[in-house]
Image (cartoon, rainbow, N blue to C red; front, side, top):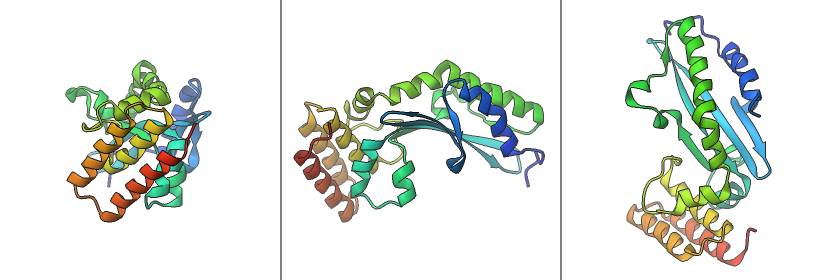
Length: 215
């Protein structure tokens, strides 16, 4: 039982809607997200309250979806229909932008809730919306994924899926280092002994991308 029993998630979201709408983000009720659509996908912001004995904490993630990347890469991976249509190409935790002493997103009172709303909006106005614009740029996102394919990236939560998305982006953007990129991801999958079904799926995706243009 949370010590902040008066918290109401619906009222909290309603309070944020007018401010996010000013920046082109509307409330998407089925996924409990703020979204802004563009020609090739959408940008989204997820603010999930988590109740505990200490109070209410917030898990805040934001990112982008490029439809062509998801529909291509996920064809070769076992996934649910819902994930296929709602997945993010890139997603990042808000805490990764914050200094260690700023990372507490816990509230216990109504005043702290009001302050948290302001804090969230200020972050997106000052940094978050600009970062989302960058993640919506196919060329910049491809570079982020594939400039150093052997190194982790903070807009990714699953390294295996990063391999599938990375090579799809590389082919979409006609990366001249295509062979180096897909071999780097292949070496990752081999070194980490992913299940054989995923390894074979990756090889089928490489063959598919070698045979068909996405542009």
